Amino acid sequence: MKIHEYQAKELFAIYGIPVALSRAVTSVEDAVNAGKEIGSPVVVKAQIHAGGRGKGGGIALAKDEAAVREAADRILGTALVTPQTGPEGRVVRTLLIEKASEIASEFYLAITVDRARRQAVAIASRAGGVNIEETAEKDPDAILKEWIEPAIGLRPFQAHRLVRKLGLPKAAVRPATKLILNLYKLFCSEDCSLAEINPLAITADDELVAIDAKLTFDDSGLFRHPATQELRDLSEEDPLEVEATAVNLNYIKLDGNVGCLVNGAGLAMATMDLIDHVGARPANFLDVGGGATAEMIEKGFRILVGDPDVEAVFINIFGGILRCDILAEGVVAAAKAVDVKLPVIVRLEGTNVEAGREILASSGLEFRTASDLEEAAEMVGDVVKGVAT
Ligand code: GDP
Ligand code: MN
Image 1 (cartoon, rainbow, N blue to C red):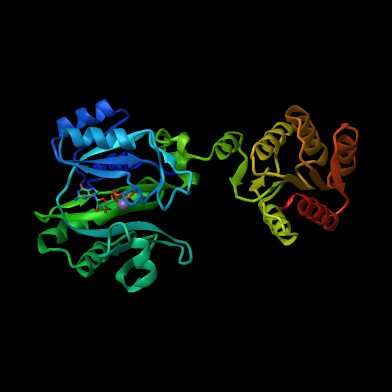
Image 2 (tube, protein in one colour):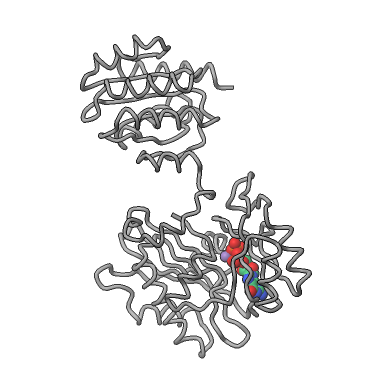
């Protein structure tokens, strides 16, 4: 789960990571008032769950009240397009009004999980700011790393080593070491998968300030953090994924044209490969799981066909704990309720398969039932050749 910069900075403050005075607002008038309270100059910052806001025009330095009004009026309510949003952009509903810092230099600092090494890693670079991705690609040596033993945690000497390699001014060495250790404390205590400060600035008076703040939380750890759950902004998430999560379905929206409903993550992956193999593209990942009820199947089916990109549906079920008759009941109920016009290809196998096929056949609806996976693949291929442009 992602949160906004202003929310992340509130957590930073709690963990002793220096941030500038700021206020989150949702109207132009409040933006102007916040600017007056904080004192010019301020930075007006669009709050969306995507980076690259500076490049997209979502960050404005405002030297007086009129400039705050102009920037807030321009940014609030628009769909901000950045290198990370896609062409449709993200609607800006909140602004952060922050005391402008006098930046002398910008660094990159993050803690994340290195999956290959199965440990957390602290990453730092002198080339902080808006072009860190480019640096990582062209000059990987400019990216410094300290891997963290899970049982031991980040050691002070490691934080200190990063700071020395960054070449910070002398006055900033101790506070920067402390800052990195505090960021690690936050990362662990809040069950983050990413804690990033880009840029971490050194000001003209050698003070450290986290200019930007990005925190991503491990969804599997969220149940331990009710306060974090409160920070969720559903308007920033894919509406179909939000609907699916609410009924415990494991759904991820993709950009293809064949919706698939499968039980088991492994079979779901194989099904996506199969769809790809016959020349189509999966529109989603959906694992309804072993313990799915007819209601969950119905909901999953509705979500699938609610995706405007879907041109055909492929239901691939190997009934074990999930019985084929339960699946068929759910699918029939949903197909009747939403009046689907799309071709629906069904491959059923396993527990109560006869009963399941019977329910589909006597439903009065048109399902294309395959007797095995090979035939199902052919059917999907044929349908797609018909629908593909
Ligand atoms: P991002 O573009 O979404 O990563 O947004 P950031 O919060 O990182 O801001 C982008 C850039 O705007 C930073 O790298 C800074 O160069 C600049 N910026 C942001 N806040 C300030 C500030 O307080 N003072 C100055 N001088 N520049 C700022
Ligand atoms: Mn940034």
